[in-house]
Image 1 (cartoon, rainbow, N blue to C red):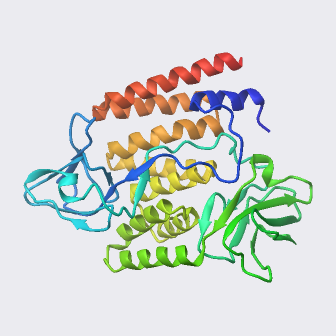
Image 2 (image 1 turned 60 degrees about the horizontal axis):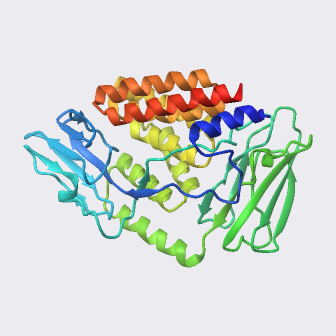
Image 3 (image 1 turned 90 degrees about the vertical axis):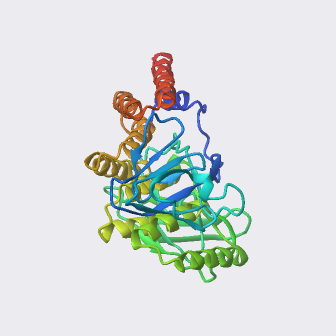
Length: 369
């Protein structure tokens, strides 16, 4: 169990106050974005964000805002999937502003958050059967597979689903760490709590009461039609995976996003953007240990590819993740590395924000002590 002082330190660092678990956390502010889905040859397509002092090499999966700029060599090509799922091919041999080719208004199918603040309660204590899936997500499937962390020494688990707005109270026992919901009736649309307890009395709710939402048929059918529309674009496998995962996250289908990203990695996908997005997805469902693993692999790939943008973003994500899971000292090390990366990008605005965050972490540590 965490000490009260350590929780307070993280809360101060995040500027949130001590987190109180609830049914479903509020979503961060989000806005539409565009996605690079193809380019050739590598190194001859570059992009620049407003705060950067220079252009950086682009890669498949880069997220572009309307105010960003693309520089395409005269012998290069690039294709962008816009937020409304139209596609845009910037003219070679010139610099283009993204909103010249991708509309800033209209029906946005994919949205992207720049706030991946992890839950201060989700240290994913190895001594409890914390939930793996589904958690903090909406689902299309009304007979979901339930998974949780295996606790050393536990011989069996009780698994319980309770309806928030219904009288459903389903319970079963198993020696496994994965089970298919086997109630007589499929789960009706609505929100459900999922609670797992070991035979030794360790419970998943020690890190908060978590659950999932079953979407109604109308909403589910609408989303499936939009997925079908994306498939008709016949994108490359890796680009399609990223676009679909972004879409799922946009619609709160976090479990589906994680599933397709993990499968893509098993199939050999080594795109930096895939690992980075998977780390983001795990952060959104507060599986911070898994998020850290994917971020570290993404960082390794980014460094090997001299992908400074992704390198900076991942290092910034690791600040809060390690503050929760590991130590203040490690978090500060990641913060300083992120500052070096953002300074190399010429993004002094991010450097100053990180310096402010550093001061808040150090001040919170003094208050706790």
